[in-house]
Image (cartoon, rainbow, N blue to C red; front, top):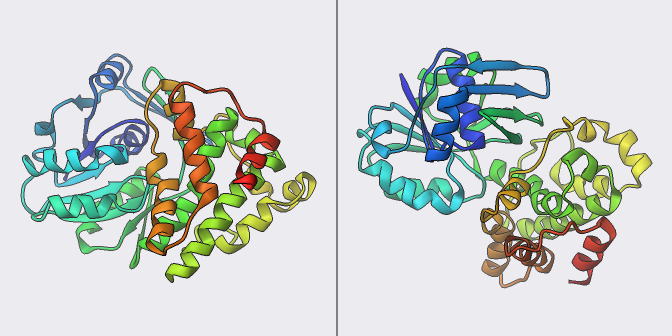
Length: 332
């Protein structure tokens, strides 16, 4: 059972690397920069629980043809590259191959499905953060298991994911799970604008209230649209804003597990800004704005976060203090 990781960046190298460490036959497909890095250093995978794995021999290719013989393809490209990735895969994959979108956002699975009619396309979700430390080293800094749309085509691979320490949680309905993950990802721009590790950012009430404001706005829109987010954390989605808004001492007491985050954990949006790359803001907060527009409403708080990230993408990467960010959002 050959597995290809297509668009192997941080998430792809980590998930694919864990599969390879567990004995799976994995080929990685991505950019030349990472191909050179992995060729020199191999993969070094660590997590917040103390896992420390080395995969010295890694097949990392840079052309779509490398995925041609794959039975299972894990798509981990950034959301903006989904359509191109789908077209590239359509030119090389065998009919009947299984393709899983392990990407942020809501609609990537649909994009892949439209362009890959001869393959089984499923939507998945990676709930944890992965930090690229360089030199082939990738670190999982937060907890979570892999979520995926339930399908018989996944059965041959269940054991491989279990051996990798990344068991698949299969769902009859994946959309509520996607929205639940997106509600958590609304912290990505807050974290990126704070320029702090996740744990330090979430320890400050003003940043948490900024995160909560974006969630509250989104939850109201989801309710209007008749969408109930799945429960993917110990606290139901509709109670998260109130929990996040508690004073620091109460939050620390009642939500200590939320602060039990590896000190190295950062968001991918922070990484993108530091590297001068375009972020996935359009596929996170932008989805909230599109949902609002479909309902004839507005989403001013999420729109403001998009504007602030756009400014950061343009070069203004000055960290915004929590009280300042909260004022900017509430005034919106």
